[in-house]
Each structure stands twice: as structure tokens, then as C-alpha cells.
Amino acid sequence: MSKINILPDLLINKIAAGEVIERPASVVRELIDNSIDAGAIDINVQILHGGKKLIRVSDNGNGMSRDDASMCFERHATSKITSEDDLFDISTLGFRGEALPAIASVSKVTLTTSTSKDGVGVKVEIGADQKREISDAPPAKGTDIEIRDIFYNTPARRKFLKTNPTELSHIIGTVVNKAFAYPEIAFSLVHNENEVLKASQAKDLKERFSQLYGEEMAEEFLEINKDSKAIKVRGFVSSPDYTRVSRSHQTIFVNNRPVKNTTINHAVCNAYREVLSKGRYPAYFVFLDVDPAMVDVNVHPAKREVIFERPDDIHRFVGAAAYEALNPGVEIDVSRPSPSKGSGYSGTSGYTPKDQGTPVVSESAPLAFNDSQTDIFSSGIAPDISTFFYIGDSFIAKVSDDGLVLIDQHAAHERILYEKFLKKIEIESAPLFLPLRIELPVKEYQLIIKNKDILQGFGIDIDDFGSNNVIIRALPKELGKADMKGLIMDISAGILEEETSGIKSDRTDEAFLKSIAARLACHKSVRGSEPLNNSELSQMMYDLDQTEEPDKCPHGRPTRVAISINDLYKMFKRK
Ligand code: ADP
Ligand code: MG
Image (cartoon, rainbow, N blue to C red; front, side, top):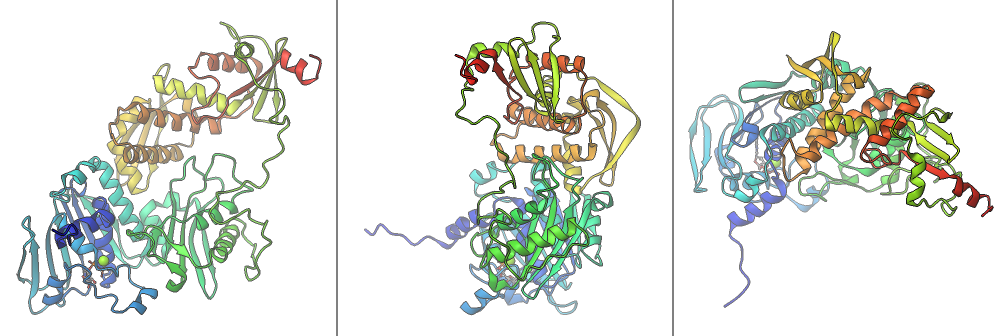
């Protein structure tokens, strides 16, 4: 008996679905792509239960004939390429003819389509038995496709879906990205009968930006626009005052497809290197248009990554575009390659800070601490009366007869606040004199509303205010004048990250709460680096001592470093 078997088509499609269709949002992406490829200018997405129950996309595109409607569920059935040559010049979003058969293999499908307003339309139904039923339908130009019970026949995959709000937020992300890339197309998204997003046809990218992210956010961004024969860059980069503590809102589109790409990311971040402090990230939306022949989109089945033929050119061009946006009036000539040391860019390597500085004490110096030396950190039961000196505006030296302690004020403060938030002790929530209304991008808005009890647990009294607005009525005193909008955006990014990455999506999970507490602590302490007086400093040292891990900030950086008198003797070769 032969051991090698040819797999049946259904199984092949299910395997393909594993690559293309990860979650409801992938179905939404593929269906919207098809609508765009069909020339639609109005695309409506309707979702039930985070897409687990229903995903429905209807468009006013070209529709399909009876034959095509039946054919489109066959493997490798596509109207978009016919020969190998076409592969190198792809101008549509789809071309593999893989999406519909993959989707149909893991869900129940109803497709209704018509090429014109007259005549007859056609309806194709694929149920649990995978049989295709074809019947007449009323004519209405365009296509309407319903996907029900995704992964109903692959329980292992269904189990890995996250909560409805998390799946919804992936769907929102997908629709927002598509809508951003195609301002000339009207989009709407309805979840469980509630309209989540509506963007009418926009006159340009800027108007679409405001529609999707709110006018308030759009105002914080600078437009980028640079053109050459081969490359065109458009989009928005955040002004240097509007930065994030995480990499949320860094979106790259290559030929209108959202992708991850280190070349472009590095080029944009590099443009900020002189204006951004450590641990802060810019936000950006960059649209790169290049000749399809210069970019390979075939490297990832879900088309999430691309490879450029000439990454250095792309890097130089995008970097120049971002730099020009940040420095109005400057124009960079990109026709000549810059000297290689210029940007510190070396292919796939990460960002290299321009100047890392020379450590004052080399690593080989006798600075290895032993446990007894940590005594000199401790300031006893009561706040002590050591002398403190500021070194620049971030570091503090605490001098006593036992030696010297160097403290990173920001990191120390972060550790203290972090534990306060985490243990929810002494978090006193103070009502705001004027409640603060904040307009959020739709995805963040949905996540925050669904998780507002978590924020309430941390002393942030927040409520739904309708139309993508939230209202904050009370805040923990510790947060003071934090940039609330930035904070809320970072927290929602954190919620999404935690819910997505963890196998468990339990919102009371300790790791989850820790990550939110770290974001809260970080936000306040970033802004809170005003110099403190001597008694405030000794209070801070005391508070730091009381924490569980006084030597590290929540991100793992050191908060304090000790040099005992013994170390000093050794350093000066007196022992
Ligand atoms: P691909 O997009 O890679 O060609 P798909 O499986 O996504 O493969 O779709 C198969 C074919 O079905 C497409 O090539 C197109 O001809 C047709 N099709 C799919 N969706 C639509 C739609 N919304 N409107 C018109 N035609 C469609
Ligand atoms: Mg397609």
C-alpha cells in the first residue's frame, strides 16, 4: 500500500485557511479587498458577536455573473491574473484566488451578486455539508456576502478566538486601515446593530484621517508628502510633542496595503532622533507607493510583510520625507546617496541612537556590588536627612558618610507609583473641577468603554459620552496633570496587546493588571520630572525603599546605583 496520499480539496482549503484566515478580522480584510478590486465606492460591513456569528460585507462594485459566482469558491479561481508575467505586475489587492475557498471551508457562506440592476442576480449558498446551492436572486448591482459561524468545523481554531470586544477591535483596525488607504470609498461598520464607524467619501487623505481618528488627533500630526518618479510617500507623522510610550499608531501602507516593515519604520523614527526623549515613540501613518515590480508582496500568505528590491533608496526617501515634515522649510536632495554613517541604518538592524555617550565608569571598574553594600540605599524607618544633589535634571546624588547613591528620579518615581497602582493602596480619586471630554479614535473608544471597570479600579472615573467621546470625571491624585488622552490611548493599546498576546484573556489576570499599572505609572512620571526639594527627595527615597523591588523600574531599568565608601577606597587604589 502506498504511503503517500493526495489530500482532498476540502482539507487543502482548510489548511490554506489556516494561513490566510486567522480570525474574523482576516475574513473582513479579504472581503473588503475583493470589494475594492471590484471597483466598489461604498462598502458596508456588518458584524455580530465580534464576527464569530456573522460577518457580512456588501458593496456596490461590478458584481459577478452566474458562472463566476459559482466558480469563485474553487481553489485558485481568480479573475485577476492569467499568466506568470502578471505575477510581477500586480495592481489588485487579491490575485491568488485563495480567499473565498479558504473562507468557505471554515464557515457557512451566502453570496448574493449581480452585475447590473436588471436581469437576474444569483445566490450561492454553502452550508455545513459544503454543498453549493445556486439560485436566482433579485438584481442589485454589487455583491453581498455573509459569513456565518467561522471555524464551526475547526473547533481547535475557534477555541483560540479571543473575547468579542477583542475580535471586534481587530475588525475595527482592519476597516480603519482599509478606509484610510481608500479615502474615495465610503465605509461603514455596524456591530450588533450599533454603528461603530461611518466614513463618507472623503476629498483627500487628510479629511479621511479626521473622519477615522477624530479632528483632535489629526491636528497633532504633520502631513508628509514627497514625490519622485519611482517612489511616492504620503501620510502623517506626529508632531514631536505628541509622542507615545508604546509603538501604537505606527502604521505603514505599501501600495495601500498595511504591512510591517523595518526599513520604513527605521527611516521614520530616525527623523525624530534629535527631538525625541528615550522611551518615547512617534506615531505615524505612512503610505508608500512604489512600482509593484519593485516590491515583493508574496513573502507572507496574509501579505503582511513586503521586501523591497532597493531598501536603501526607500530608506533614504522616506527618511527625507519625514524629516522635511518635522522641519518645515527644509528640503532634502535624495538624488545622491548620503554617506553610509549618516542614518545609522544597517539593513535590518534596529535603531542606533546617534550618540550613546561614553560611560563615566567603565564596566571593568570595581563596581560589582555585594549584598552588604545595598545597606547604604536604605534610609531607615523614617525619611532620612541625607544631602541630595541634582546632576542635570534627571539624576540625583544622595551623599552620606556611607557613600554615594545615584538615583534616576523618573525610574524611581515610576517604581513607587507602579506599586501604588498595582496594590491599589492610597489611590485617592479626586473629582475633576471640570470633567474632561476626550475624543478617541474608534478602536480605542470601543476598547475603553468595554473595559472601563478596569480603569475605575485604578481610580479613573470614566464614562461613555457617545460618538467616540469619553468623559473623565475623577482621577487619582497621583496622575496630576498627566496627558490624559495620551494615557487613555496607551492603556487601550495595552489592553489590546495583553488580550491578544496572552493565551488567557482573563482581565483580572495579574500580568494584565501589572501592564496597565506600569503604563499609568509611566505616564505620570514622564511628565513629573520637576525638581523636588530635599524633604520631597527624602520622602521619595523612603517610599522607594518600601516597594517590593526598589532597584528596578517596572520596565526593568535600574532606579538606583550605590557606590559605598569601600568601593571608593578600591576605586582610588587605597585598599
Ligand atoms: P482573488 O481576490 O485572489 O482573485 P478570491 O478568492 O478573493 O481571490 O476571489 C475570487 C474571485 O471572485 C475574484 O478574482 C473575483 O473575480 C471574484 N470576486 C470575489 N469577491 C467579489 C466581489 N465582492 N465583487 C466582484 N467579484 C468578486
Ligand atoms: Mg480576494
